[in-house]
Length: 261
Image (cartoon, rainbow, N blue to C red; front, side, top):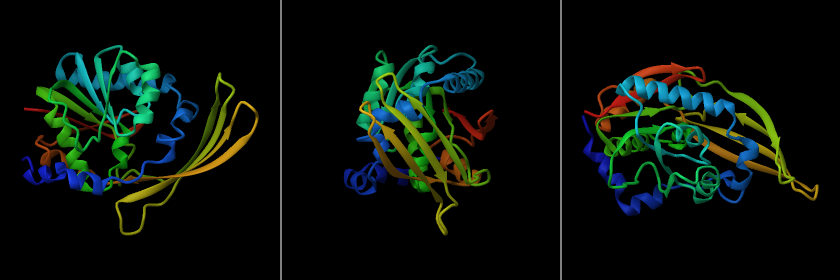
């Protein structure tokens, strides 16, 4: 059953007080994003899986998709082959990156917890950007945004990187060489959950080499929410959905799918 208390999250003073500074990777370093995470074949495979799950749920491929937390547009780069895309992200600099590869998509600056576009879509996709939400209220608010923007019978798919039951600290390394003479090498350290909190930190260490050969080392901390499956299911119910179907895909154990009645 929909939780009316979520409406208070849409009051403007609460908006501002609940926002935290964005990581540098999404602001002044956003132009480096394609060297950390290019729109490669892994995104193609994941987009195909998203379309397959949505099509199975709806009985057809959705003609229109709203993506909340679209970031640099790597998912949309492949999803747009199947549907007309509207992309929402909190970071204007990341939307600019997305415009470079998704010029035909609509781009809107907005917070997935609060944005209201005044129209409805056949499907809503929320990928790993939802990991930046740190409270169960915020989680429910983002899923309520999906509910508001769905046509009757439409479907939402939410793909967090993990839930509490599956989170494992790890270290990831990589990087790319750009055609413009820039290069990046990075290390991402995913740490143990914060004691007494539903959150964990990922520390990004990025070595940025400019065309002139100079190298800058940047540390950028990202904080993510991690919640048990029961909290995710409760958030869907608070947002007005019935309990979601919980699926798995090759990249994660918990993919949440629900339809609007």
